[in-house]
Image (tube, one colour):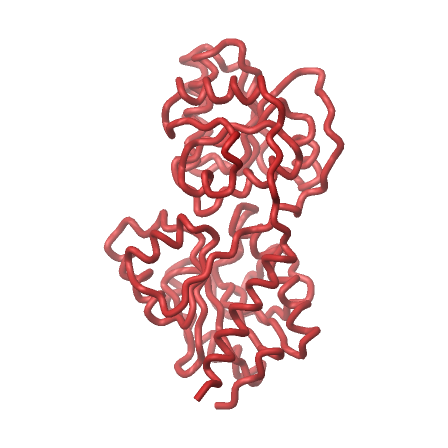
Length: 352
């Protein structure tokens, strides 16, 4: 099969698992893929994406979307994705590379694959580890969004190529900072166990001087009820507020007016709110996990994950100090790096 030149790669993304609410995976897709499509188009290439039957639920300008007959469930995707990819390739014409970011991975025989691994939180089971190991072995290149995740991937298997491409942090508008009438601490992220929001609630009981906490993100499972119950037990219910998911403009305004940003996660593949806070010039306190430590300046107060005492202390320190400024990578840079990996894989395939 003839392969396109490095400057004209034709890439198909397996997007069958991308119909998700806003979070790290969806943010990555909405920011990086349209930029990558523009780069490829300028060089004579193209970017297409196979989507589930219901579509994605969000726009990807410049990316050709091909709806499959596959439903949104994992079982349907596992059983039908290979055939759906082959059908998409037949309708598109020549494709040089398939890019995927979910497990189990799949790709037509004879085409190089690039696998994107956001994190390893679902690879604790034997089946999950087996799927990830297979994806690593089948891919010509593996991309992770942090060195922390790259290290986890490398412990499981040795990729042919392993690349770290950090997220950009310039997707939210930078709003002029101002002081709200009532101070509050912004806690962004889905309400789910790995984000560990209960530690934030419990930190309020450790220090009555801490401001109200505003949790912004989608609710997963029963976490919101658990937080309500814990806040009532500790007598801090009046200092806990929720918004659910909000538009980007409102989120940018919250970053600009909050007293500080608090991140309590036990596990992250990257930790995008760290960059969002730095971009906004907000004070910040973080759980001391590898992904956070990788991108946060050393001056940012941090605490042992799960320790409400440490959390309260670190947050108090953040509130008392000036905002920490840090370098924030752009999504344009990230897209250039992504296209560079794709092009390198295609170029290596051409080599004798």
